[in-house]
Length: 362
Image (cartoon, rainbow, N blue to C red; front, side, top):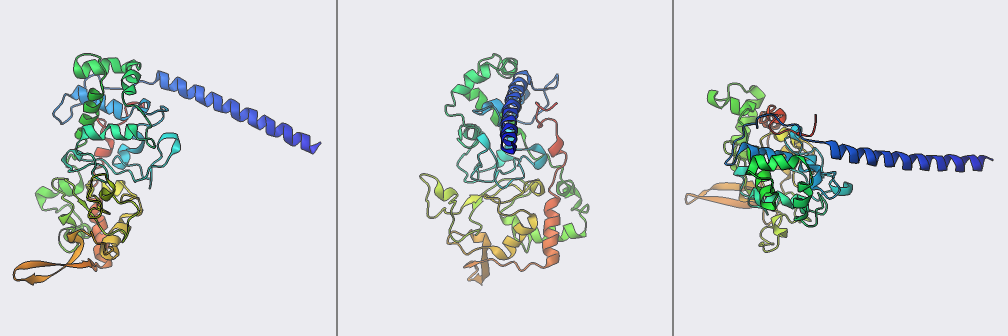
């Protein structure tokens, strides 16, 4: 008798689960069909070389889940405005819940960057924007040309393309231009505590933040890799490993693979307090751990960037760079100060700016 009851209960649960799943699918499909972006009557004003209407189209496309193979993932899924356009995870979940191979970096002032992605493989936004769309893990569109017919069948894009380009023709080039325009608009607006204090010799920083700024610019040599004025980024091997599983730029076809093993893009530090975990593999959860790496954890890799090597006394007026990895020997107060200073690079207005938010969230 007990066995029959168990079987009946199990069967009921299975039927309930299937029914619930079907309801969720129908609800999801219905929501997708009825959703439309909520946009201002007049386009927001954006900085850039193209029209505000083109950038508006790019903003909608950035948050468009129908650019993915199963209509569940958008660029904005992994690049969340409140987190400086990162997602707070070691690795992101893309199509069908698959994990990405690298950490999702934040987005700020990318237009000033010398290379895009962790391995700098894209040199401009037009090249960048469709790579996640066609990546089998991230958004899974196998043939990028199918996007044109897909977008033509979504009613709200008809007017958006007319506004941006004068007619409703959907092309891959227009998709790229629009999305690139939106990414270009994500520029640092110079509203962080640090930047607001530049005109006053940073008198607005408290004592511990001042200590950290001094470490950043002097003892820590952080400014030799990270420009706070222009936001440009370079690439470097920062001694995370003696032998890298992920080769970085050294893993690219056509690269000088041995000389570029472990070389990764150096990110902009704007909003850095919001964009953890840190590094290409998300190995550091906190800024304190990042600071300790540079203080005492840099490995003596053969490709270690010269800026992270010990520098000896001048010989014949020439700088002598050692093969040894740097040891900064920061005090606890200096490390605490450096973390506090990095937090002054946060722009809270940027994380709430309506020009950049998800237009599908009402």
